[in-house]
Length: 174
Image (tube, rainbow, N blue to C red):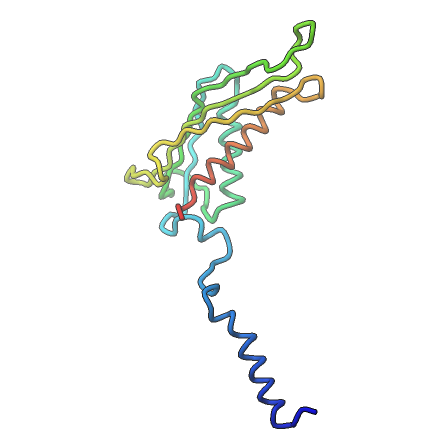
């Protein structure tokens, strides 16, 4: 049988043990993506990606994907050059298509598409904001034409992967 004097003491001990984790080391953690990016940069202008490829509209598609990734996954605001305090420029410097596997009649069964993209993120003074002054990303995707996939779908998948990689490189190093 618990005495009536010990009930307030047990209640106080329960409250103390419940609040103890709040005062430990976990209290310094932050939630949300605003802490992953530089606090001094609020806006970014994404210039149209240039392309050394002979395939049309790759630069426009890459720019659109990067802008969407920045808008959806960062606290940065996309703006025009006159109002921006940072600038992101990029160039597709290599576009390749390689047959990985063929059938017995020499028709392609598996095709690899790869790009190399060079990206720079600078502030108004031209100071680089990424860990490396110029970032080169290599990425490739394999598609199977017999399975209903096409070069366009493979390129779109490649564009989305590269856009995520670029925005990931914009994060502050730990």
